[in-house]
Image 1 (cartoon, rainbow, N blue to C red):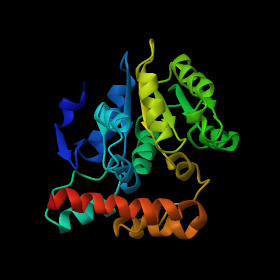
Image 2 (cartoon, rainbow, N blue to C red):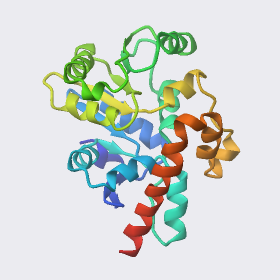
Image 3 (spheres, rainbow, N blue to C red):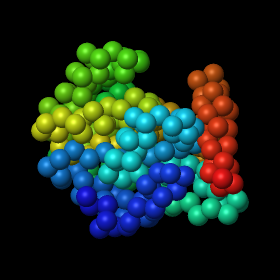
Image 4 (cartoon, rainbow, N blue to C red):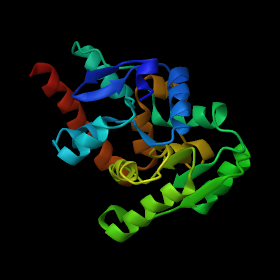
Length: 250
């Protein structure tokens, strides 16, 4: 693994996080993109930690076997510091993806996008002059459709892309990344990217920078999409915070 070249893994809440700055994170992902084997990157937030706290062995294994695991939650970071924990440096997935497109990916870099519509693909081509992009948009809930799940994984392998952006929601994107890792001839790096491509292309509006720095990006997104995100931020987010408290006082 290349992880040790930039930083050692730090156990935080039972996950092997890497605590490095954004420039180092981009460099580490860039190196992984040139690997002959498939690597994948996960960026857990409060909702992800809520699922992790349910002790799903399969999900735990996926996070533990990730090439790079970055904390994507300023709320979790702030809460952890307030109760005496030392969280890793926050690397928001949306920021990581934007930095990759601006500082690592060139017009001739082969990339693969899993999820998102044709409009998103066209916007990526327009904004970044990307010439080599493979795209597949599996149906909602494809994780439960074994045939489609396998077809999607095979598409990623066949693309031979340097960077694969998995934007099909969690935990589908993490399970898909792990499945590709088990397949022959898979190469490059997969980034479990959530809504980052929507932010990158302007399909969705991201919170202003001052709200991001105040750990209030979740509140902005909740106001923008209350029906879709209420459960994630109010229920799963709260469970994620409770998971931090339990870990601290246990």
